[in-house]
Amino acid sequence: MELTKEMARGEEEFHGVLIVGGGICGLATALALHIKGIDSLVLEKAESLRATGAGISLKANGWRVLEQFKVSEELRELALPLTGMDMKNIHSDKVIKVPYRSECRCVKRSDLVETLARHLPGGSIRFGCQVEEISLDPITRYPIVSTSNGSTIRAKVLIGCDGANSVVAKFLGLKPVRFLPLWAARGLTTFPEGHNFRDKFLNLVGKGMTFRLVPIDDKTCKLWLILMHVNCRISGCANSRDPSLIRQVALQAMQGYPEEILDVVRSCEIESVSLAQICYRAPWNMLLQPFREGTVTVAGDAMHAMGPFIGQGGSASLEDALVLARCLSEKAIGVGDDRKLARSVQEVLRSYVNQRRWRILRLCVQAFLNGQLIVASSKLKKVVLRAVVKVLFKGSTTSQWHDQYDCGSL
Image (cartoon, rainbow, N blue to C red; front, side, top):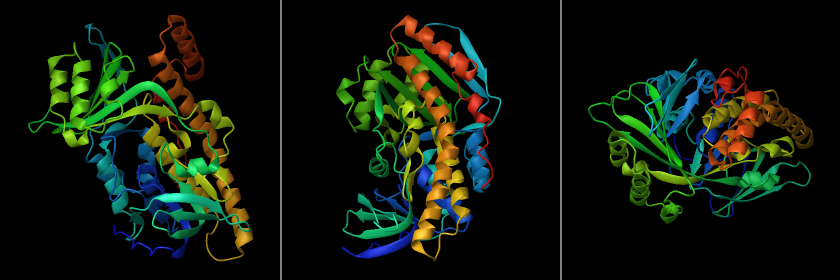
């Protein structure tokens, strides 16, 4: 993988497919298109590959996609297969064991993005490139992108994979994300001599928060995640990027947790620590949002940001990449009458949106309901929410119902 040369200020260039965002979804989309023989250019505003969030859980549906991208075996070597989840309240000895019926592994985000990028042709990613403005050609409806260095890029297809605060989603008129009164602090802990947490996802519930520990491999790495309710002592670092302060406040809020767990937090790799308020796209908007205009569309969190309550955000983004590449490969994005080709691509993107809308709607609904269960203070509201989950998802608050989903072949 190589960086493309930066364009001179004011220069104009042309591309078939332009992808905004060099995270998991953007790189996966570029790789899927490459496998189908379609060139693309990824614009990433950061100066290097970004991997915010420390680790990401991938369920069976995500691994089926990675198999088709021909990177699954590389990544499986870096991540333990998880056999289930142990759920426990820190004030009780009762442990609820939830076995996993299908494949689930937690992968370092850096491992995933680096693997995806490594399989792309040289020059596929342009770093340090911020999209400032998007418009449509008045005749062809092709997108025109203006960047922070003053360059103009015309493309036949523009795909926004630029996260929850997507510039492309804003251009499409998508409603802005909403926020829960919950924050997620994430980090990695390395045990040089190995750890004794085996192959189980550990979920410890305390007052106003949940601690989640997920083994990544059997030797050194852990992912820890704390969900802190607004009532916890987090106000002092809610907007902080200081990892030391984030860790300090997390430890203060975790009074009463077992010493073994506190040691995991104390020993975390400080450079991996981050804090973010949990956001989501309202599920009712999934029914009405266009997700497409002209030959512009979105994928990943730009399309369906959801809380981490069912662990499907990453896998769903990989599904988006596969379906989008499959749809685009049905029409040659090459030379020809621009207006006819534009109409053809618009139909393809309409098909992509239609294929994904109902899938992401169900995911977003369950993630939303699970989030509301956490923040609800009324017992009656919790009863009602559990009843709705029971009706819609057979009573399961986990994602195992979704894990069996197959988005098809590339």
